[in-house]
Every structure is written in C-alpha cells, then in structure tokens.
Image 1 (spheres, rainbow, N blue to C red):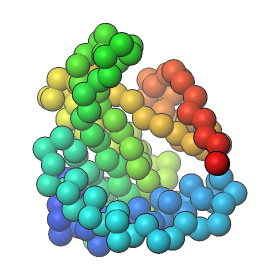
Image 2: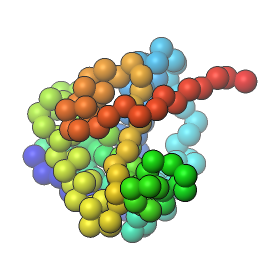
Image 3: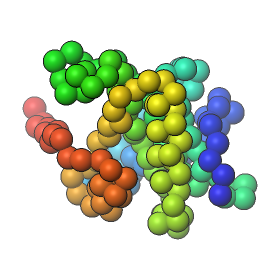
Image 4: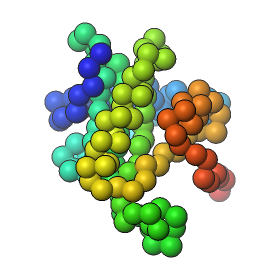
Length: 157
C-alpha cells in the first residue's frame, strides 16, 4: 500500500472516487444518488490540485487507486477557539476508502500525512466534519485523537 500526492494526471480517478464518496454519503443519509455536480467539481478539483494550501492524497494498492483524502490549510476565524490556538487551521475532508480496502490502516496513514503537512505549515489545529450517522468514521476519528466540538445542522428551505 502506497500513499502518494495526487496530481493533475489523477483527475479522472479522483472524480470517480469523489462520486463514490458522494453516493456513500447519500446512502447513509437515505437520499437518492446525487448527480449533476461533476462539471463544476472538476473545475474546483483542477484548481485545488494546483494549490500549495491543499494536499490531495491517494492510496494505491498494486495499480489500483483505492482511496483518497484531502488536507486544506485555512486561516482560523478570529474570536474562535481555533484562532486562540493558531492563526491557521488544517481541515481534513473527503476521506474515502473503497469498501474492500477499509479497516486496513489506510485512513490512519492518510491522517499521518495530513498531520505532517499541517505541522510543516504551522497549523495549530486539525479539524474535520463527519456525518452524524457515519459511526465507523466517528470512532476512527476519536481513536486518532479528535474530540467532538460542535454539531452542524441543516434545514431545507
């Protein structure tokens, strides 16, 4: 198992993984599969792959790309707990591993790489969001040292 930094040449595979990630979240939320976002997301992805403030990682088993994780550096918001610790916060997002490769330590390897990237960039905190009903991910994040600090709520209007 190798963890590598994604580049523009990985755009097609990242798009496939992102779609699987979206559909996984749709399924645990009881929604129908989301579509129609691909064109806009490809533009965002291309821009992000060129950014120094974003690290996109891929897990490779043999010749197959089996997972992804994104790490992003953001300025901390003044007046928040994050800002009191550091002017920069690392955000970990879109952690996704294909089902047959889960529970093999891949996510932990992603997090180690993200933490290195964040420390090198002098981020004071690492943050992430997890779907409220994604209990397996929530347990993993707690095992990695994350603490619950807020609840994000949504209402359709």
